[in-house]
Length: 113
Image 1 (spheres, rainbow, N blue to C red):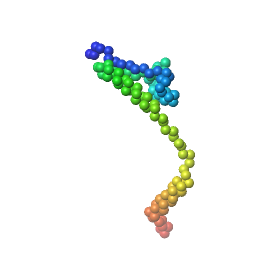
Image 2 (tube, rainbow, N blue to C red):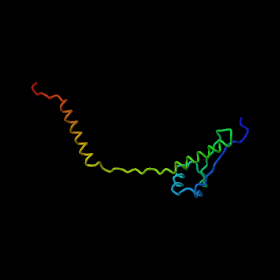
Image 3 (cartoon, rainbow, N blue to C red):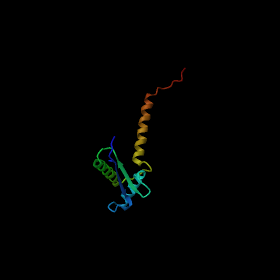
Image 4 (cartoon, rainbow, N blue to C red):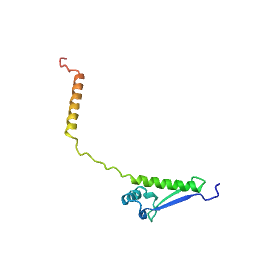
């Protein structure tokens, strides 16, 4: 059993981080809302290693990764409301071609029975 306390916990007060732009703060708070306490502190902890220094390094690495993810601005989707005329004409031409192909496979029905 590990008798020494090597767990490490890191706290980042997001609203007081003057080095971080406001939009990055907002994204970080949105993405990591489950890791925040009532004071809007981002809390990250680690106790995987027996060394407190390694646990501290892992906590800092996790925090850096979270901030890096918040730095990336999400892409805005541009919805296409209607297909272009070129796309419509191609679609109709392909339908007609396919229809003609199926017509050639159809056997002619005879009424002389």
